[in-house]
Structure formats: C-alpha cells, structure tokens
Image (cartoon, rainbow, N blue to C red):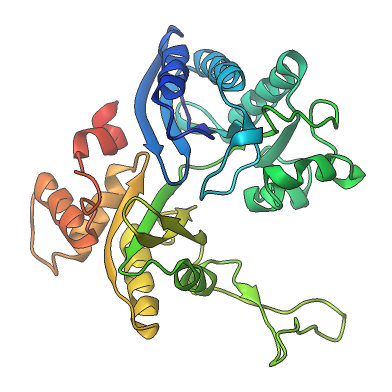
Length: 340
C-alpha cells in the first residue's frame, strides 16, 4: 500500500491574494505532492491549505510553504477573528493510508527541527507529538495569541520544543504535530452578536466552562481546584467568531472525531442551544475537506429511512446542513475521497 500523509497548514493570511498564491506555488513546486484545497477566509484573515503525498514529499512541501509564509507575512500587522500565534500558525501531519501515527509524529518533529534551525521560528509540538500533557491541546499553546508570545517565551514553562525562546516579531511561532483527521465545521447564526455565538460554544464544547457563583467568581472544590461544567458534545472544540462580510456570528468548531460527534450532531445541538437563546441557525460551513463517510452519515440521518444513492445522500446533507449558504458547495472539491 502506498504511504500517503495529509498536511493541513493554517496560514495567517486570508486577504492578500499574492501571498496566498505564493504559498500555494511553493507547495505545487514539490514533486510528489498534490494540492487538494486552498480555503482563504477574509474575516478570519487565515487560509487553510490541504495537500497530500508520500511522507518525504509532504515534509518538504510543509517546510517550503512555511518558508514562503515567513517571507510574505508580517505578524506585527496581522489582525483577524481566528486565534493565531504565528504566520504558519499550525502545521499538522495526518496519516491517510499506509502510515501510522508514530510516523507522522516523526515527520512533525523533523519539520519542527528544520524550521527552528533554518528559519529561526520557535516551534511547539501538540497532539500526538506533544512531549507533555500541558501541550497536547492547541488552544492551550495559543492562549494569549501572538500578542502575548514575547512574554510567553520568557516563561521557562513555555520554552519552545525546538528553537531558542527568542521572540520573532515577523513570524511569531509555529505549532506542529500529528493528529487524526478532523473536520473544521462552522454553524451560522442569524445574529451579529458574537457573545451569543461564544455562549453556545461554551455550552457545547467538550472542555465546557468554568463554574461561577452569583458574583461571577470561579467555584472551587475542597482541593482548591476550579470546577468546570462539561459541554454537551464529546470530541468537539468550539468558539464564537464574527464574520463581518456577512454580518453574522458563527459557532466555529473542530470535530476532533467525527465518528463520536458528527456534523449533523453538532448542527442539531447548536440549533437547540440557539433556540434557547431566541436566535436561529441559518446554515453551516465546511472549512477544508471532509471524509465521504461524514457526508453520507448526515445524508442518511436526514433521509429518515429513505434509501438513496451516494450522490443523493451527499445532496441531502448539503441541503439540510445548509452547507451552501455562504458559498457554493462543490462535493468534488470538498470530499477527500473525490480528490484522491
């Protein structure tokens, strides 16, 4: 079986097309790599890129695209809705076929060593590549974002996994690691109030929220530990964001394991929570690619026992999840099996 690895780097640029084109060109220039998807978002000021290939080729494309991002993006002038810590913000390696997670961990570490050595960008390892539980979660590493990075690098507890703890004002820092396939999935609301979107995110995300008393003070247990109220959905990370160009708020989610919490599970739960706040869900958005199975599962869920063919199930999922509300949904470009 051919070894295939996916890489899904997120770059902190979603507005300057010349920069996005330069990053894309640096990936296409690597022999043995296939660029599957380029998804810029002007409000997030972020572009998610998906490419696949054999491990060594993917590793080279990851480095070359990071180098290009470092040349073109200046984080000192970057603003955007999505949390970020650097120009090449996060660079995950994902096993697709013929590869094990350990092999992707090794790729991430080799990538991190090279970027730190040649580009002088501090590197943090996360997910399966993390060297401590405190660094496994991407949101923990990103806490404080780019604006707090200089201070963070001065804290011995946040010494980079690779590179010197020296603030690179132009490129920031990069997080890399190995992870399972996740679905980046956002649900749209009929409100421009981002606080309502974030309230829903707090209610549904697995990590939940801190319990507070009537004076808004965190509640602690007998051991002095802050008590957290778990969210309603397992294997889900979420936050509320604002899409200025559409004048709406979104619940932005990462479905870490779509077999535990599917797109339709997330959509229905966000809809339930939205109704409790007297707002409505109007549709959703898929960022990057999804496995075909996730679309078929949604199509079957909304077909109430009706037997359809594959194309019809996909169409039903698009319709019921409102995946074409903001932009046309092209299944050939958004479903990973259709790209291979």
